[in-house]
Length: 151
Length: 108
Image (cartoon, each protein chain N blue to C red):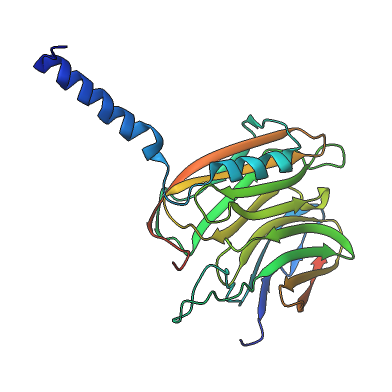
């Protein structure tokens, strides 16, 4: 088969696009399957809806050893309706688990701030579980200049 | 390692029903178990794995902690106070040690 110059260029462009967006996109650590598994264990197999949860993280973290992160969940926090727990996950860390916060109606509102380690640029996920069993999540990408896992 | 020293900030007084913010920090190196020493051996994990806050024996806030929390773990969280009482904070170390701190609040 004769391949013209135009066809050859088209083919190589396609191949380059495949490399860029195909399997090549996963960074070294990324363990999205493990993240997904922890998420499902936490929610009991439910797929979380969006909204209610707000995850606040810096867009660019200079030092991956201490990345300030806050979560807040929209809830009345009464005995009838409150946020039971919020799980924080980091998709690109050696272990995706970061922390799980447990709230009670005595919390008044559902929010928390802490500092976490990030091995590199990655998505951070917050999943909230209400006392009625419904789940919500929020996701943010944090760019990390210096990783924080002491490799 | 030096004994971890907890530091807690609770307002001295509040009005009934007010939602206050509590800030806690404990000095702890939070060894993740991922690092290696100069001979290439893994440094064993030693972190604080649980933090709880109780008010007069009732749970307010708690947190299960993984190695991905930074050294000197810091937590900021809200609490609704209805009456005067004492907050009790507990940190549980991987080594089995438990560090506690108590702070009273006056409700007017």
